[in-house]
Image 1: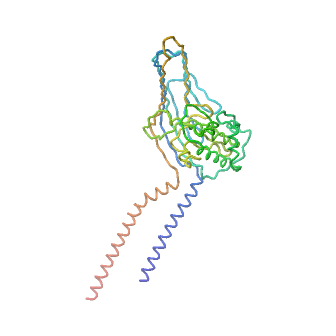
Image 2 (image 1 turned 90 degrees about the vertical axis):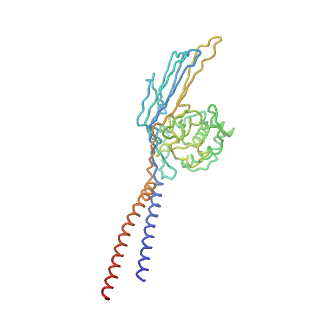
Image 3 (image 1 turned 45 degrees about the vertical axis):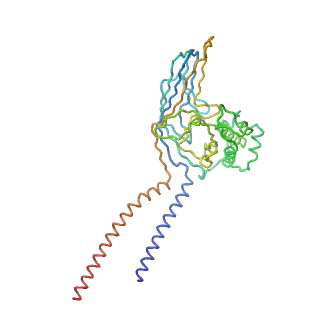
Length: 383
């Protein structure tokens, strides 16, 4: 009886030790994971097509089309390859590091069509800076990005007394990330989403209490810049991207969001528009739903202008244009150590159980055989 009690105690202690080790491992991994930034990657093969057609009844005397090329933007994405057709008239880049292709025509007749196709392999980084230990350095006034991302922007007007009053109402932290958080909190919650036909800016949003992604973005920018934190607008596609996705950039798919610059870290993401409905998931985090195209004020990723010579008794020309996005392949990989550990443990548990059952069953069979043998031997001895 005493041996059985001792064996049971040893088994219980062994089980508690295993549980403690597993629990301690998960706590350690969770703590370590909070110090990491990269959580995974979303690898896209995609293409986008811009179609332009003059449906008449007049010829166009001039057409200029500017399209942004997808490119790498640290830290949110990397372009591995890109190609396009037909050949552009010219290419250009600007001080914000945007890349554009231009198609220009001195004559664009009735029923004439232009179709531009761009193919790209793209990697989105799935990031989470929210709990990471980040080292921050004071801003350097001679830093090019510092000056560029604080330059005057009419839509993020830091001279507006209302902007300055709100920014000055935030607590003094001497930490640009904490200051930016107060700006994110205000811009995410103060205004209501309403789609507008054109950019109105931060001052409009403050006085009217509504706006679309441009107003959420410019309000965040105005408040951060008023606190001396460089920030900049980005244009993007936004969608529930899956393999086989086929959609235009109308409505919410054409998106604007800000990033702000911290010396010693670089650019950090925020998305106050989406923060209006999913607050913590859009602060210092990225996902596979947002693909960035351009950076800077008034940098739409597509821009079309055209002219024609008016004629009496003939209506103005009708122009068809469509920007369509296709996701050919999408593969998402998470690099979280705690996710990987949990997956390994859950996968291994059935194997361990089967192995343990086999060993335990074999041992029980041997013990049974020995017990039967002992009984037979005792019986033979008695006789």
